[in-house]
Amino acid sequence: MTATATLRYQKQWRLERSRGLTRTRPADPVRGHLQELLRGHASLRGIADISGIPVSVVARIANGGQSTVSNRVATALLEVTLTALTQRPNPDGFVPKVGAVRRIRALQAIGHCARDIAAATSLTERDIYLVVNQAGRWITQARWEAVAHAYDQLSMTPGHSSKARAIATAAGYPPPLAWDEDAIDDAAAEPAKPGEDPEDLDEVAVQALMAGRQPAGLREMERVEAVRRLAEHGWSDHSIGRRLNVCDRTVLRLRQAHQIRSGWSV
Image 1: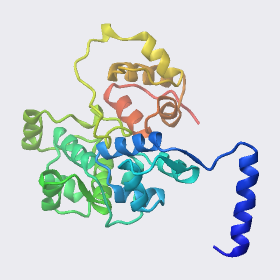
Image 2 (image 1 turned 180 degrees about the vertical axis):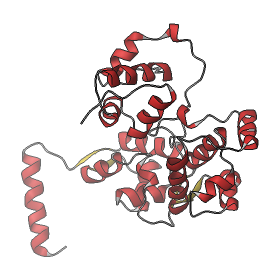
Image 3 (image 1 turned 90 degrees about the horizontal axis):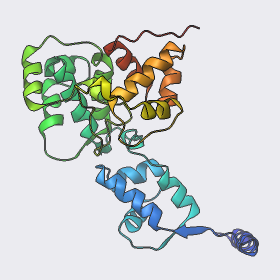
Image 4 (image 1 turned 180 degrees about the horizontal axis):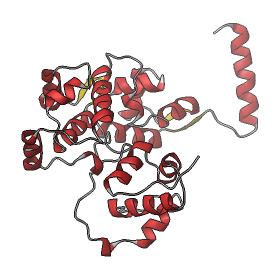
């Protein structure tokens, strides 16, 4: 830092201090967020790559090595999400593989074998096998994107492999409709449970969803009912997704699976 820049910094610091402003904040909330990301299979280097904060700083905060952080660092780290961690700019960088594994197994549950999945990607059948079975919690960004692309292509169309379907059924793999696009990469998320009795529909939860809130203990049946009602009122899949905090593709899959007609017109 030049002498002029140092003087400018000191002047600005004194001005902010006189106004009761600080450039730092307690590190505990940031540390809690980082630890939550790490429990979700994030890596320190991945967090650093997405946030632009040096990995040594990320590690020191996550490990409790400092009690305060600058506002700039805190903001950058708190904006990192599990979804963002699968969007690294480096195709060779490692990202959590939990969502890729879930996508492959969900495709198996509707009858797509490894050959089908590989044909929809730049990967080989062996690559598909390795994503699911190889030890470790991470795969490269490029490999994750290939699996996600296959999932987008195949998840709305049943496959023809009775063997893949039988293996998935025996193992209890949930199908694509059991996963929200915004939850499938979250290691702590659970798939929706089938066979729930419509008579147990929680009307309060449905109304909360339609108002843009996310009630605790939300079940798939309440989400489906909210989609049904909003579609009947002429909402587009995009608008429904924004209101329910899910992706457009999730809304489309729910409508198709439950024979909900779209009431939206241009």
